[in-house]
Length: 211
Length: 316
Image (cartoon, rainbow over all chains, first blue to last red; front, side, top):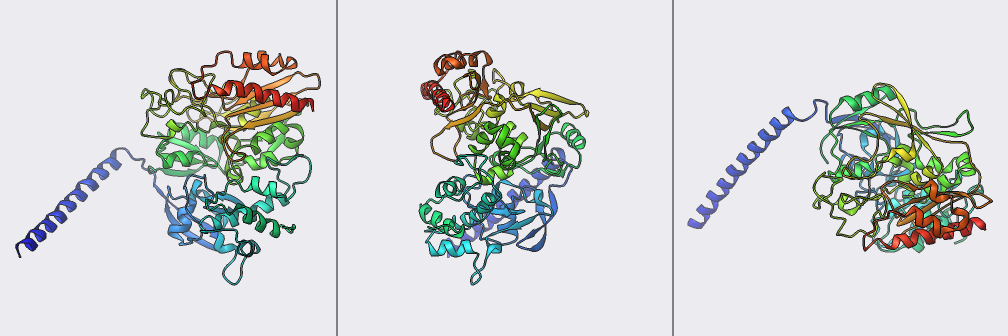
């Protein structure tokens, strides 16, 4: 059983060694924080409303709205894609407006109202946009879908509010729902499966236009 | 991301004072650029001052017929404002050509002006970059420089300014209003806000420590045809290779600023006097001191062709 003995010794050594490493590391970080780090607290108590429910969290200031939703409130419908505002998978509604949840800090949203895909509709009680995505097969792997749906719901509201887009011909005319407008306005939501044409169909149907 | 403390500023003066008095402090507004850079540890503030609730989110008429745009007016709201669409269509068009719907909903007027370059070597912390780490060198000069600047550059830096909005504001002679940490205010013509890189590419603008942009003022409308033409690698949600912001009057005179080609919105009032004679002469003067790389020399021809297309559109 010599080999087992060696194994046990090395395991014990390993544990001792790692404990020592941890001790050294924490001492180092303690002295670092005593000399350099700002005295002000690095976490903040934050409360906001998510899908109609008031939530209060003590959060490290670094926590993005996306991580607060996913890691702290376990609302994992909102997806993390690029985490840099390039893909749109994390799109949620803040005070009714679509934003990239990865590029905003949770602490910045004190008192605000946030809607995620879970708040738009649930199984058996789908939001019309969710139903239309299913009906038109507006996805393949589905990873970008919650972001696509949140984005498209808010995007149609932007058109209703007469917000122009890059492809709007006349800035003084009323904004319209056309396939070109939908494509331009949804360019912040990437679908690497390439379900774009079905996504446009789903949105067009919800907007009350002929597909 | 490095740890930081956080405060929500309640007055403009307190925000400016806190920023000047705290080592490593930065303002945060929309955060769409700052947080991106903080995640990569290119920006490492130790204290963030949230200015989102300072009430700087209104667009108001000025006594001399212009508009004062609050620093925190979101890009979406500025582009959608009826007065901007009617009298400053150039600005609405430039805003709508930039970023995505989600980003425009958060990005602010002041933040857009102060956003950092998207030079790939500024973003790659494994590469030398004089802007990110002064004195380390410029990897872009011998690297992938297709997107980068051709005028206003130096041996230390060829990064370009990524904003569309700022190019339109340069053509419209916008004035940037600020509050300094001692409570005094000043007005900076947008032409003077950004600095050229020279030997100090890490210093990008003339704002002092703690100085906060409170508004951007547009002079009274000048009329004319407003055209913003952006040339990019995909039709939406991409930075400009070249952009042209032009106001063209009935007699062919007008104003031209170019984006995507320089460390700041690029305009030459002497060059644009040649507008009635066409794009060639204007471009030659506008780009007289260009120092392109092999990879981005195509931008010189692209500026002339884009301006030519804009002038054709203006003639209708």
